[in-house]
Length: 235
Ligand SMILES: Nc1ncnc2c1ncn2[C@@H]1O[C@H](COP(=O)(O)OP(=O)(O)OP(=O)(O)O)[C@@H](O)[C@H]1O
Ligand SMILES: [Mg+2]
Image (tube, rainbow, N blue to C red):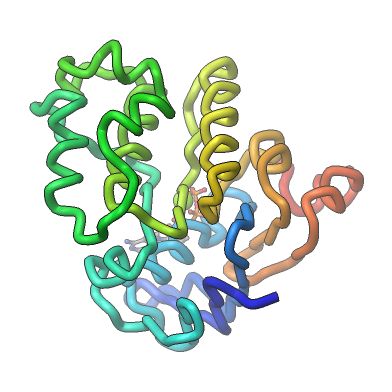
């Protein structure tokens, strides 16, 4: 397997507090891979380390075979990695359409994504295109933050806990929409605490525990092994 992204032996700390202790993973083009793990195990820190938002102390991040460790986040994004952070921050005073338009203007990668294409992927956003983003529901905000990241025409999408805090029906819709992205050929790295969402979507999973990879394998292996799931994931 030729990896699109490869993370090797990542060690990341916040000040004196070390969070990642040698995380390694890889993603091939077109794959959907899920980073699973309980609260606080280092899922977001892994994504932040990939994006250049937190600089790892040690380890490598290889994008298409070349090192991108130490690159500033804008340069990582320009190389083709889009990040949807877990806090879903949008420009509250701008409308839905304006949020997408701003993202398109600052995007430095040419490609197929336009606000119209985002509305095709997320039809509910079209109906509220003029609404100020500060008034959106959690699910609408999640669609908008994903849409905004797509404006950068990424090849790899890092999705940090997209289903968190959303109602089951909203999560169901989101699952279909992310599946549609996968079907278009986008490569996806997903971070999740919840098993249901991730196991439906992901081809392979990595389970983190205390900043190290405790399990990696096909999603089905975790789906079929309740013991393993309970050991690694249930609170
Ligand atoms: N900016 C920061 N400064 C100091 N410590 C931090 C910072 N961000 C995260 N941490 C700590 O690092 C550890 C890992 O956090 P991280 O956010 O990577 O976990 P996570 O797996 O994404 O958890 P969650 O499921 O809650 O999002 C936690 O103990 C957290 O408190
Ligand atoms: Mg997190």
